Length: 574
Image (cartoon, rainbow, N blue to C red; front, side, top):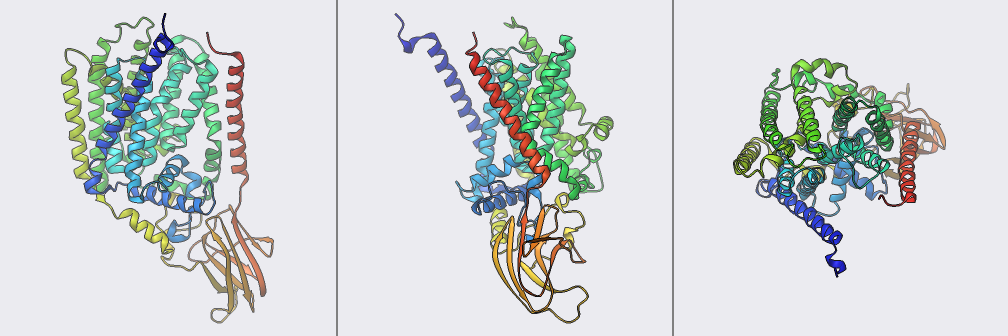
């Protein structure tokens, strides 16, 4: 008689748990190796390092003020602020801010990278474990966690948001394969699969907008491919339903970000040097630093293309072995299609698509498609490395290429441990940090903003003569999203806040809403105040677009819960 502990189902669960545990350990070990240079060189200060570090610090400071979901970045533009958190997806800056409460701030980038690259390996294990041998899944997870594009992001770009989005992509692909019927979902029903896709797809968008755009196009292509090969509309409507639900979950971010773009200089995101036409592989412009980095990124992309192509041939030889359902063959085809599309879009002849497909130009850099190419790169290597005949050669080659790429990037980047301490000191002193061109409110030029400006300044009323009027100012409240003052003046005056005008700011004088003015040089908020004692209140109000976006997200979440309750009522699958 078999004891419960020896029951086959229990043994399968134990083996499955050990597999996940080993994948976690290997992914964690790989991530630790990636950050090893940080321990003696400091933080890799890539292109976007200060932007992300400043966002973490600002968000953490607002949490201390009781602001759960920040919208206005208080210390940007030397303390004048900007609406960065409305337009930049929240998951990465929230994770960075949260880590700041757990570890020293200088260690936050290291811990962030370790967590995310460990997540990348585990997510890839979740994708590949039913298609590859156990050794293949572990090899693939390792290759995905340390793929050349991930190393480029870690060492030279410091784009923590895109790094997080790339870590989640394997789960998005797995959900697509199951949702459109390319592979069978043996454990979950169709509604649960759709819900899973919606959640992970939304998580990619909430991590990084360019990655969200690329994922949208890539997954739409796969749904269309499945519909074409199966000669059925089902993959299309299933995909449309999953995408709609995913976009619904992100509405609290996407709706305000889309609507309020008219209030900022969003076109600056495509300024000179940042357009797709200037960033195709090996493109040269009149900027030596740009050309050097583009050469490095292009070389990494070509390296990934070559390895993926050769490994796909090796994978094809084994694709039909023990593939009674034909799932491995279908997956091989899908990954080959995905790698071809990602590779082609990095080259200049595709400029037509970059200029005409909706929002694709906002991806900015065609070589960003390496993040998508990393999926077939890791999967095909996971097939090739465990082979008995040539596997050891594959393994040795991948180790040599990965280590060589990492060594080159470590030597090519800038290392600095003072970035975060300098930012913290600037915030503590009230000086703030640099803003971003694309989030500068319309009518302002952030380069004209003074470096040092008081929180409140009294100016004479318009048309009045003489020096600075006499007035007594008492600050009653000063937070990132609310400022309240009491002003006593003998004559009418103007009160200039260290704050940029933005439509979401509402100004009130003695409880009555007023229209803020500006100074001539830049778009500083100025409020007219009558003689006598006045109460001024300026607060960041909830606009209609944010209310609508939040309502759509709540409705989508309720739809997910309803789907789960319906499935639960039906009982377990046979």
